[in-house]
Image 1 (spheres, rainbow, N blue to C red):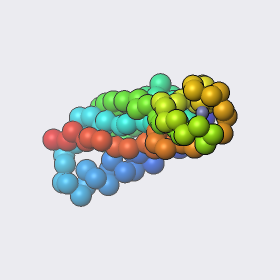
Image 2: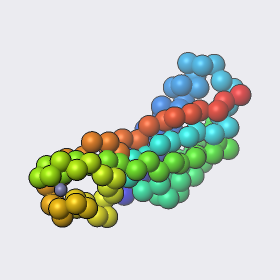
Image 3: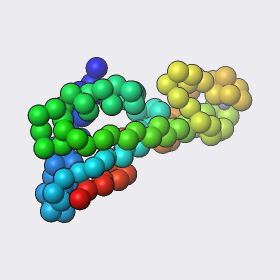
Length: 113
Ligand SMILES: [Zn+2]
């Protein structure tokens, strides 16, 4: 489960941004997680609770948006929404695919005070 490491890194990032922006605290952090990133949003929420415990961000909510990833079929050129559960071209059933988007995890919003 690498979500714990990701949450740890996320917390450091939030802390850095909060200090740079001279925030007193952070109400919520919004994350976009691509469906091809392999990161499971529910695990992120659980791990977040674990890493913020006992820190100045213990009350900070994590809001996770799942963003559909796109892949391109290398055989027929079709571009489609893909997730890790079914990585197969819907047009020709090829397994030769190239991910285009959805492999990232991005902080989209930090609501501070
Ligand atoms: Zn195809």
